[in-house]
Image 1 (cartoon, rainbow, N blue to C red):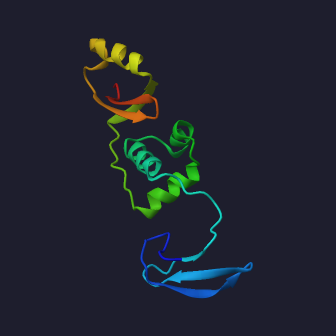
Image 2: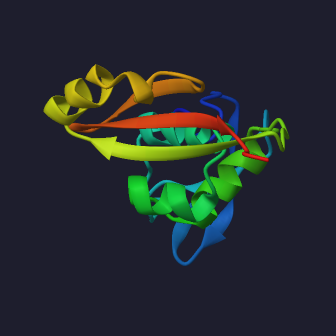
Amino acid sequence: MDFCPQCQSDEIVKSGIVNDRQRYKCKSCNYFFTVNKLGKKIDQYYVTKALQLYLEGLTYREIERILGISHVSVMNWVKKYNIQKVQNLDFHPTYKILSQSELGNYFSLPENTKGSGVIVTELGDKFMIIKWERFKE
């Protein structure tokens, strides 16, 4: 083992044996791990995308439905990276998932671009439009 899977430091030492596998400890971040670590690692692209969607106001479960990643994983990333949402009760986000041709049609209609902020982000072969609208009084 050359590097810590958590922080990529090379300051690792042996730290016992668990289930017949050598256990290691990273001296930089105090992370314990084994050589044949079980489980899957999620591509950093999806971590970044999940955190962006969270900051845009989507709930954990909405992010889970859109990206297909457990809402618990998203909660753990928010906690790990200390992400803080800005609370603004005057606006609420709505979102749509569109194909490339639907995206062109969406922006050709003037009512879809007036009176609110819009962001477009890529999700695989589709696009997500997040729109902030003021609450109507």
